[in-house]
Length: 323
Image (cartoon, rainbow, N blue to C red; front, side, top):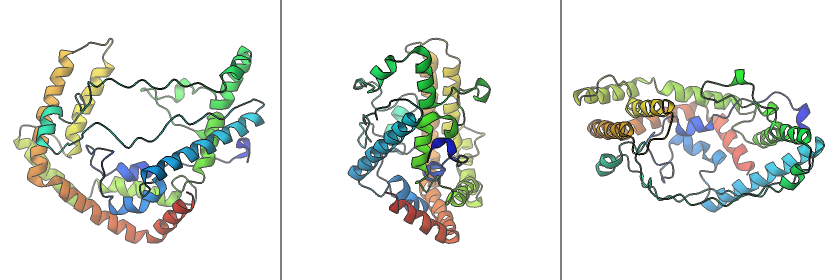
């Protein structure tokens, strides 16, 4: 199927929302944690039920498939293209110890936003990447090079379509051969296929509505009352505490015109982060927030599963078949 004849783009995948929307925002993404009931159902789509070796194999397989599709597309557009080798890998190991529920850890790092484990360790230099198409591109005229890159990546995003922070809504139909290749792969992905879009929409709506569940609201209110007593009034949800530091940190960087080493303003924010995180930890412990939240989420997810059993079974079967 030629990319120029493909229909309208499907909506963006919502699986990431499903997997992270109600999880612990401070949890180590590399931690070996038990999946929630709904995420256990969805794990087949993102490889959560695969071994590290199987996930790496899947990652490499998709890379090869994507590059072959890009080469096919570029050839149809009149250019040469050598599929690029896979230079990346999925990393499962990390020297960072993430313990947001440990008092000793929080006393040192707060939420781990300004200071964090491994911060002072020198980064290992990346292996220099050599584009196999570099010689061919250099042989083209300036106008031919521009046409080559437009065919490969699509035209530049118009300024009026960009948000203030420079982000924009990605559209595969205007993203050249790379966009078409990714769309072809996504078409086999149940999280982005038209067939399972109603389920994905239902999952998105479920996780959005979950935040307004009365039981969770009561738990957040109990935590907020504790924070008020601890000298931090005004919060309504447990995630608000960390978000307040994140907002201040973003404002700091947005207002920075030059890099200031050991900036006292940043150090002061780091101290306030730790102070807030310690009170937050006290209130989480006092309200048994993590366990209560997990229990509430699990109950709601089980209800969702019961209401969408057939759709979830079909989704899981499609995900397992597509490997």
